[in-house]
Image (cartoon, rainbow, N blue to C red; front, side, top):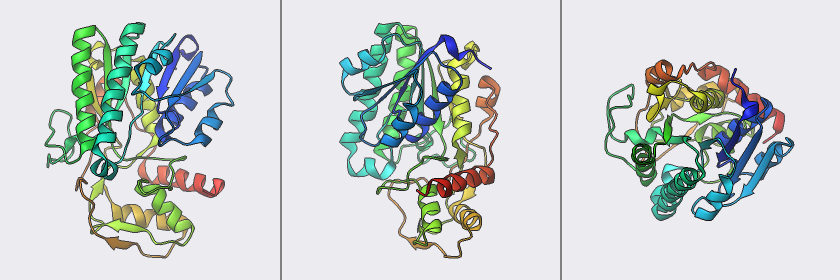
Length: 322
């Protein structure tokens, strides 16, 4: 286990789903200090409330598109875990200007502030959407196609900027292309909610569950604890070959949306069939991660499989009555 007690961490997007889990892990394992920043544009106050029970947590309500706010957040920090973004493919199709400003300029400002504060290593969230129309499965890091959404463009832009900043400013970056992360605290609320909390909410509350298209499109669904593990390993990696690389972070499996719905229906004892509707613009048809690179260079080893992750997530939804 790593020695967290000597390090001070900055977690961006800390009111969000993945970032709040990373921050909580660090706090539970004795981090010297965890600073979390979030604009609360898409984050949730309950995640901040959960983290504020830890005395070594500090919250900054601010936006990364403001450089002075980034400079304030970087004071005294050793390692940065950048999870903040305006997510969602359909949201980016509707408002590309908001997605581009937040995801690209927020990243640039954070890196500039980190450089000036002497922070060398930044671990950051990219996305499997970067693969675009590249047809081969499983997805491998060195093969990408044309992006299918403004969101995908912002994530690829950040990857390119990271490698450029590493060369120019002697910094260290590790980027993660996430594959459909799910787990406790992922909200079913809002028009851009992810599919798993929506399906669970529908099954538990006898509401219609909507499938975009035929339901045979495939995804690599990845439990959030696996993603936390990857971020921790990246922040503490001492392998020079692991630096300034981008990695797939998934389970390495492939499930249709119908597989997903049927498993959730079984776990929740729901007999209501899903409702099919039109396919969604900008969506990738099939997705599956090759995680060999992350296993080899970072020692990544996803421990929670698809069904067990769904079981834990359903259990949390039932216990919290979301």
